[in-house]
Image 1 (spheres, one colour):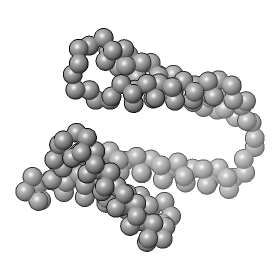
Image 2: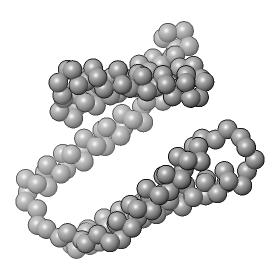
Image 3: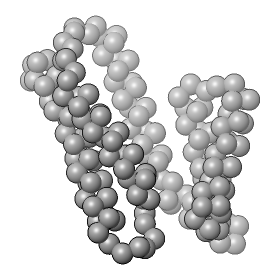
Image 4: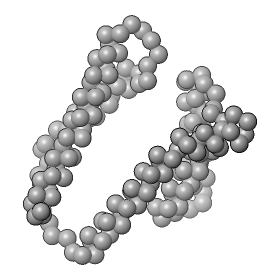
Length: 159
């Protein structure tokens, strides 16, 4: 497979992803407009904003000029290392439902954010603490304030 084919295939993926997501969100949005009033996974305004953002991303991908550039071995190795880090981070995201069952959602979210920040190169401890506090406040606000649902506590803490 040549470099030209790789660029062509990556551009196709970059174009098809927002288009596919646009179709999925559009179907959900249409369904919520047609259905009687009921609790929804995504509120109508969020769906509408998501549709606009996906349409803009799709147009941006269509209008983008392909960049064909030769990468050195060091650049390819660095890109491969970042890709592996992204896969490991995504695997951590997939573990969140299982760990939240054991230690609770709020603690799992804070632990995930802490480990992700440290794994991707760390930051000042003040920034990590601010991110953790912001995450806790956001989780509390969404679950308790908006959804009126109590935190998933986890098995270790009596949940």
